[in-house]
Image (tube, rainbow, N blue to C red; front, side):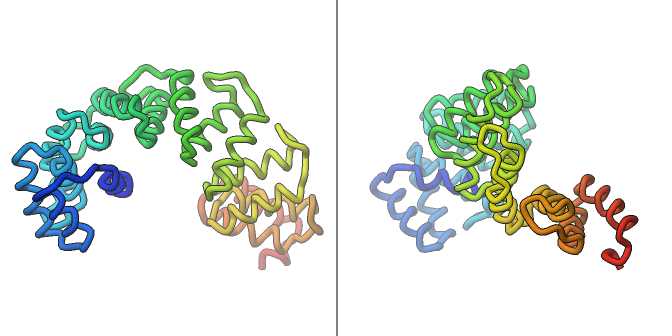
Length: 281
């Protein structure tokens, strides 16, 4: 949550005077001075200062962390149609921080920001529609918002719309499009997308079946400690698919996955240890 709120600070245009001086102090990590200057500007109805004070109260920068005060300043900025304030209010309402938890209000504020092409708001709104949280469950609307954000190169959205195309949620099932979006997200470092892309190459879903590419993506995801990637690598080594059969490596990968609670890896470990006890000792 902090990452997204802090990121909005950079989207605010600069105003002269106290706000500009405050922004300079903030960049120099003089947070107490910045807060004082932003307070002066905010009291003069400077929307950028109001948003930034909300950020600082959310993060405890130069002031005591206080989500209630953050919500108050975000509301003032939102009333002046600051897109980032719309989004940040949505976050607070979704989490119930500083305000009473209210998913309907979260959806309201996310939608205002989403319609202004604020990409994280599009993703969060899509998630609310996917879950039926604060809005009626609607996979078609979820897919709409995920794809809008995906087209703006947001990896989480690319992964999510990949899932929707893979499973046919709110849109026609299309493995080629699923693989396309997984690859987009995978190239930006999304570990689960890397694993899912590996599975598509392993099975030949939407792409030509290529075990070397499946291995490539599983290994990249495994470097990020992705449990399913470990589990899938273990299975390839256990069966000798695309690699030389090696129970020891299968055991090592399944152990890593099992430590994260992967049930498939736990099951396969039990089978392997009964079949080849020496590997497990």
